[in-house]
Image 1 (spheres, helix red, strand yellow):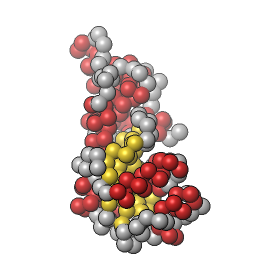
Image 2: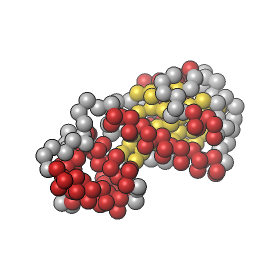
Image 3: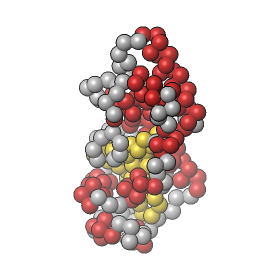
Length: 216
């Protein structure tokens, strides 16, 4: 279902039965990007319909949500989802946020039909894979846009130099790679209907600090 390339690495690396990647956040409306099976797709659908569940908690906290025994999960946090999911063959459920810098892009939901507890090494690996998936998702989202936020308008070499300087500033702000810093600038440009050059000028003029944005 969908682009299984997002989900497959998680199934290969972790002791889970299925996975689903969904977009939730700053750039697009909630949507299931891929699901490995009907159960994974239904888990996503329930959370979208009810507007609650592990994926929303992971998005809000920007931290993994681990429910090795779904029957004993904190139902007070998402009672409607816990009740609805009780009818599915799901014993364990895990959600990891997909984010780059301050940008919330989506969530990966992982489930197991049998009770399973992720080891620390598993959790660390899942977080690493979520970073990779978030990066891939952002590239794909920006690639689908009709309007290209990377267009700088007039300015030529000067314009690109300013973007390069702004990329360096974002690296310092967020501690990310140059590639991720440019993705953050491109995504901000799209989300605010700006060119990359305009965003670069805001960064270099101290009007935009992504580190401060992420703390709000």
